[in-house]
Image (tube, rainbow, N blue to C red; front, side, top):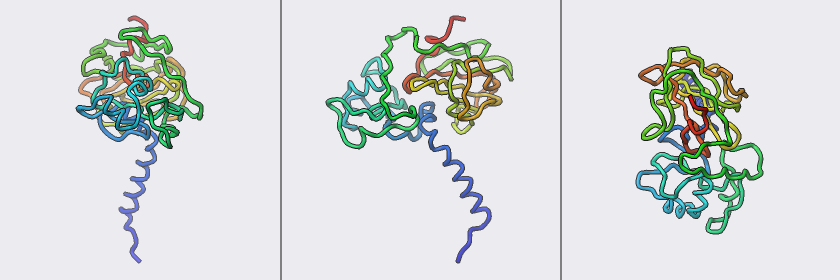
Length: 249
């Protein structure tokens, strides 16, 4: 009988350890432009239209617009992650397909089996009022939301405290996503995520509850050419301008 060599056993244990974070794939996919997404979701590819995506998944365009809080059926971006199964396992409305797909509950969204009410749509530029954020770090806003930037970049000195912009639960705290360095994702209910990237040091762990204003990290330059905090606000999985929920500076 053949036996595994010690280095082979170590390699398998290392691989198993990496797989233990599989439940976070959906959250990471919300930040990255490539990679797998969870069940009930689809990543937009080059050339896709919402009508094509809806048709491929047996849904209607209006359902996808509603489930993803889209302001327009024509505004989807390559790499964007869209929900293609009903929120919370609710039945699809007319125009969608039934069956097991309509009953499945996407990973990473809430813990109860009851349906979650859809977040109200936002008009372009409209202030966000269903979450109140505070600025996650002092410093200079070197880059704002828009164009290729889906968040804001705040620059300051190494070690500057990074605080939670709102109360929530730490959904991810590690450095496994290329381009984000030492990364923290905080979930705020079923609708919002805040993302804090390029930290020097992480001060919280996955699963930990945090209060608004609690120090969660130290500013750094991990996976960045300068010392900065890259901060995103995601609403229903889609990046929105965080200054719409932040107080004026």
